[in-house]
Image (cartoon, rainbow, N blue to C red):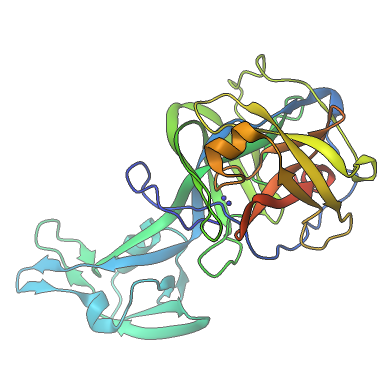
Length: 342
C-alpha cells in the first residue's frame, strides 16, 4: 500500500505508491519513548505527503541550446534515466540545486559519479553554456522529491507529533528512502480503484495545500513521523488509549479509514493471527469483514496504510500491507513499535 510506485501524475510532480509487500527492519529506538496516552488522538484521515529526498534521480535527458546549436552533455557522457547522481567533481549531490551550484564553478574538467544497478559509475562530462541564460547546463531532468497519499495513524497533541503509514516509503528496489524533511497536507479522497485478486486497488486523492498537518521528520521501518503543525485542530478527533500487543485477542477488531472525502469511518475486521516478535513488524494478520468496505474497495487498498486498528476501545496498531492474492487480508504493525519510533 505508501511503497511508492503508482503515479498520481495529474496532481503531484512525482509518484509514490504506499504498498508495502516486502520485509522491513526494526526501528532501533529506546522502548521508554512512549507517548502520553492522555494526549493520543485517533487518526484514520487521509494525508498528502510531499517528501524531500536526499538523492537526485535522473528521470530524463534533454538538449541544451548553445551558440553552436543543440547538445546534450549528459547523453554524450553516458548518463541514463534512473541513474542517481551521487557526486560531481567529488562533491556530494543531495538536491537539484547542488548540480547547478557545482557546475557553475570554474573547473578545468568535470567528472560526474552516478549510482546505477548497485554500482557507482564515474564519467567525464563537459557542461554546455546555455544561450539564453549564459549558465552552464548538463541536460538532465531530475527529481529530488516524492509525493503520494496515505493515512495518519495517530496524533500526539502534547508532544506535537503525528505518525502515519506504519511502514517505510521505499524505492523501486524496495529500499528505504532517506528523506530530508517534507510537508504533510490534509487530503481529499475523490475516487477508489477496487482491489482484485492479483491486482491491488488504490485510493486516489488530492492535496489540500492550504491545510498542513505537519512537517515530515523521519521515514523509518515503522512509518513516516513528523512534527505536528501548531495550527492543527484536534477538536474533531477522538482521544484514545494504546493497547499493548499482549492485550490483543484473536477475533473482532476495527479499522478507521477514509475511502471517500476527508472523514474516517469505522469498519469491522478480524484479527486472524498475532506475532508479537515479528522482525518485519508484521505483528498481525487481519481480514476485512465489513460488507460496506468490501463493496467499496474489495478490501485493503493502496493509500490505506496507516489506518489505525482498534480493539476493545484501544489503539493496538495500524494497517500496513495487503495480500496481493487476497485483498481482503493484510498485515498490521503493533502500536508499540510506532510509538517507540519518534
